[in-house]
Image (cartoon, rainbow, N blue to C red; front, top):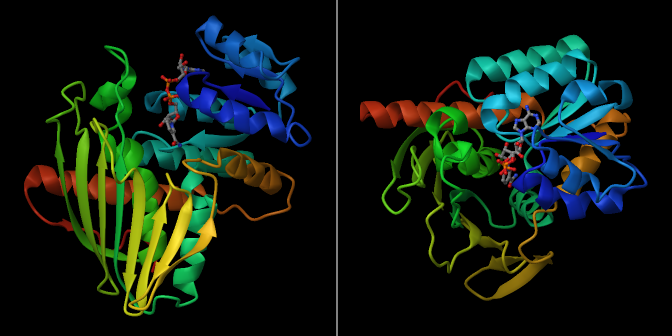
Length: 329
Ligand SMILES: NC(=O)c1ccc[n+]([C@@H]2O[C@H](COP(=O)([O-])OP(=O)(O)OC[C@H]3O[C@@H](n4cnc5c(N)ncnc54)[C@H](O)[C@@H]3O)[C@@H](O)[C@H]2O)c1
């Protein structure tokens, strides 16, 4: 496998990938900045650093791509056309047409194209999903997710600019949690989004985002995300209210709690403030080896982006977004 893009996210993956050495051989790290490629290669001896993807194509079966959003289409297409399996960091690509092109390339090449949505594999969110499906809290009528971060890169970084990021905080980071809301609550009907640059003037798009979605069941979903938090109480928190109780996931504390009028108890625990990135990569390898069906498939990843694009469009026009027909019911 090659790691393509050796910036901040690749550093986050590094410690999670090293223990997977029995399943994955990282043969090369690729980044146009040679120092970054070399720095990451050092964690996977004898992996070699390269500055061009062409230089690794003969030696790999698959790649994990962690490059800027405006490069996802070109990088993904090149890898798929060369017959490689691709795990693409979120969001899949910048626009709907780009996503569709990548999906078509994956189909043509008959290779796995997986979207890296680690929240789909996070044990607390998996347990949350199961508890909701099992009816632990009865009929769900509200799910809310808060994420508070301070995210600021160096001046001129691609993630500050709308054209290269593809939007603002909601598109780049909120896509994880819109995805979680869709999987928890089903078919979206309408919604609204308000974003602001106040507090994050380095962002060309919104640095702080509120999205509210009404679902076909009548349930409401809300996501608050900011890249401007100078402090945090909530960290990464999800709450789901049902007619029989409350489920709350605190990712920083590493626990899922179940609350009823009688008591609160912890029903699942996990590593504190962990992204469990290795579980996504393990799944990618399982799918390549035919041991599992792809759960983070590009079509469902595209659905959360479609919701975001419609929310953005409606915000610009000052209307409520019609979200019907986006997610197969
Ligand atoms: N899942 C998460 O929680 C999470 C968190 C942060 C970032 N990400 C995602 O990871 C990806 C990368 O983000 P980042 O924060 O690491 O950005 P970054 O700017 O820190 O790193 C990107 C790297 O890609 C390199 N690069 C640019 N073009 C390239 C190309 N054509 N081929 C190979 N390398 C290339 C750059 O030189 C840079 O080193 C994005 O898709 C981002 O949304 C995911």
